[in-house]
Structure formats: structure tokens, C-alpha cells
Length: 340
Image (cartoon, rainbow, N blue to C red):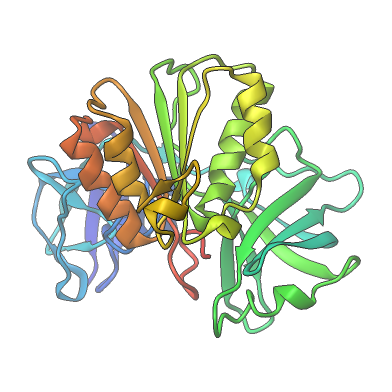
């Protein structure tokens, strides 16, 4: 039996089928609520239930450390009856904003032993509309899809750049090493809810793990093109130096913003061998770099455990929970968030 979901102080109302999450029902109905991982980790989808009751989908927990008083994870809960939502934000999806393209491989380069930088060109005369930090889906022949963040800024809209980590047994990531210029891929974009406000001038800290660098690069290159001036820190973590695979991009930002602070973090390198890098995890690097994060914005992108650890570290340093924004990379075949 389906239940009806409404949004407080609006005329929006839609059905939620048995076993369907509040978030999935909203997206199916054309209502865009903030989200990223859809696995109850990132906390982007937190919101309140103004009326009614919800239960965990499949018995899952409906709250985590990102939830404030009275808030739940819309991605993990289903209505027990008719409910009224009080989301942090929402908007109607624009059907014309999401498009499919047959993109052509322009180049395919190995940036690290386990990372490919794949550059795609759109058909002549066509442009992709997306926001910095969003992602696309590569549509595979078996009907499944893989999701990857755009690493290029939205101003470069006739091409798309992806950073793809090679995952053992990964259906597409194992195939990517064989892609050659001229090969065609079916793609759809744009997906993802980017919450960083363009007019926010507060100090911002980007924390990336591995290929979580891709959406960070898109955001920073977009800020560079818009000549944004604000205090910026980048903490980029990898197991070893090879994992920090794009030093030229960092050098460009350092030239543009003399006060740009870069903290490379190497988790598998002993302190005596780390050179100028921080020896340890990115959450440890964050705590070592900041005594107080009050009044800052933190944008974190990486695996679920990494994001959880960074969220905890940021809270320890006084960050307001509403100023923590996350983009969680989940393993395929999940298509609701970027996959590594």
C-alpha cells in the first residue's frame, strides 16, 4: 500500500510505494532534495518529518551523526503512513536540465598506476550544462550505469574530464584502460546536489581522498575562472605520493591564490619519509592543520569511512554541522553517487 508524502508549506504531494525511500519517491516525482551517497553516510539528505512517522528501509538506521534534533535521513527512511516533510531545501527538477550524449573518447592517460584521466568530447555543436561538483553516468550495454564526477569546470562545456580509479573486478573501471581515442560512450548528466554557495566568502577547506580530487578540481577551477577571492585550504590524501597524481593543478592554484594552502597527506608513508607531506590520514591532517574550524566551510569527498572520519574531526574542531558538505564515492554498481 502506497502512502502520500507532502512538503510543508507547499502544494507538493506525491506517492511513496512500499519499500521505497522518501528520497527515491521524491526524485521519481520530480522533486529534487539534497543527496549524495544514498547509503546513509554523507548526511546530505537530512531533513525533518513535520507530521507522521517513518521507519528504516529494510530495518536500516534512519539517523547518523549529521542529523540534528528531529532530523532523519530521507534516503534511509520510508513512511509508515502519510507524512509531511520539512526539508532543509528542495526544488522541482527541470526535465530539460538532464541530457544524454554519445561522447567520443578524446584521450585516455594514466595519471597514476591505478588512475586513468579520461577526456571525452561531445558531438559537434552540443554543450553539457552542469555545476562544478556534479557528476555524470556512463550507461553500459547491460542497462547498468557507473557514475563519475566531472573534473573540469562548467565553463569547458564541450568536453568532459573524468578521473577513474581502477577497481579490482570493476565492470567499467577495468574496461577504461582499453578505451582509445574515437571510442564512443553513452553518458547522461548532470546529477548531484552541490550546496556550496557561490556568494559565500568564508574560509573554505576542501578535503579529498584519492579520486575524490575530481569534483574538488572542478570546483576550484570554476572558482579560478570566476576570480573568487577567499581563504582556501586543500587537504588531499593518498596512500603514497603516486596517489597525488595532478601536482600541476595544485601549482596553478597556488599561483592564482598566494594564500592558497595545500596539505598533502600520505597514510602509508612513515613520518620520516613523507618529505613535506603530512604522514597520516586526511582527518588527522585536518585536526593538525586547524585548531578551530568555527566560521569555516568544509567540503569533503571520498569513501564513506573517510567522510565519516573527517566529519568527526571537523566537529571536534568546532565546525557547525550545517557547514559540512560531503560527496561520498561508493563502489559500483551504485549509480546514485560518484563511483571510484
